[in-house]
Length: 116
Image 1 (tube, rainbow, N blue to C red):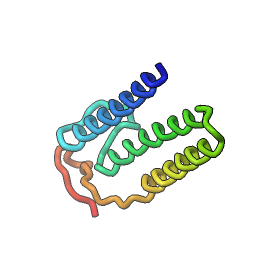
Image 2: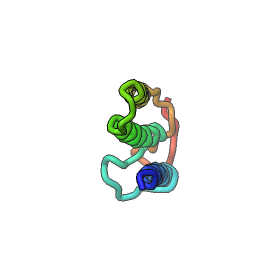
Image 3: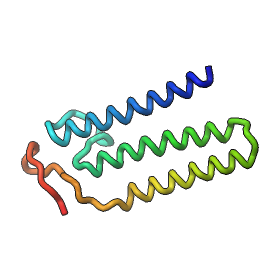
Image 4: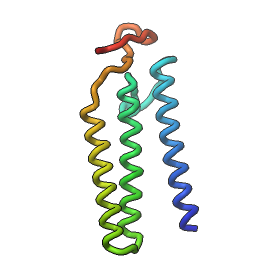
């Protein structure tokens, strides 16, 4: 039963990532959708940042799961330390990645241009 719950969390994670990517690509290349402000994607960088946000949440949940797993203290410390380093690296990537991707201009909602 415990293994089934772990697999179902992974499947939900994959589904959320696929939904964000599908909606983002639709907004970028086809047309606008009526989405909440936190899900509006105007460039490929925005799309990457949304996926990184979901990945950070998933990794954090796995870290907390390991924290309460009942393994030895050294194993838990190593795993949670690795999770913390991964979250720090993903957060650094999210805030410091250069922006050189396609962005939808404000004048024509269906045209694309490159920002450098």
